[in-house]
Length: 267
Image 1 (cartoon, rainbow, N blue to C red):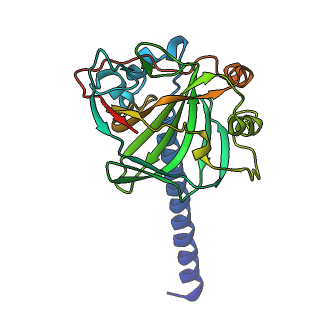
Image 2: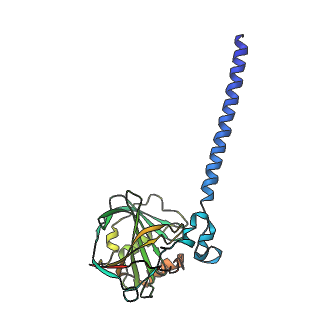
Image 3: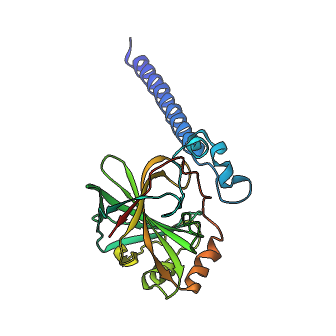
């Protein structure tokens, strides 16, 4: 075989191989994008995507419909006769740079590393906190104006949420700073350098209800450790109005208890 013929064949083989790689790469990218798109299911709190429909919107949301340990619930010291135990929760929240995000469903404050909570001798890292209006949980069938959820996760992937009711009262300095950082649209402010300590948003009394539940948003995954502080925190009426003007309603309805144990752990 002469040299020119060899070079022509080599060029042809290389061109075909390159074309195959380009097509394969395009196909891989296409299917990856398609898979990502399939996971982006619209859901909401009103209209055709309301909470009663979540379990029908996607197979991934099936727990919202058939789960037996769903959240939120009504917490009652009278009707449910909870057992009383000493408090077993310890907060190790540190000051952190945060990112304030409007994700289209709530305002989320993403937290930096280094803060945690110890619940029943299990340590969970604080990942973020966010807000609902009105409160998702009720106490003795009474809802509060808002509720804040501190979301934690441990190395095993287990989730623990600490919640606190929010009532109308004095202006809250930490909330004032967070509200000022709320971005326009569904994205965070760029180059945000706000720093805060989530411990400043907790009430002084750490008595709390605990029970096993779920995420209160799709996919409604269960085996979530819920810990709802009994003492509410206060924010001002204008601060509540600021949030309500963005999200007029973002609370999942109360779910059935289905015989779950509720424990009241006293501080």
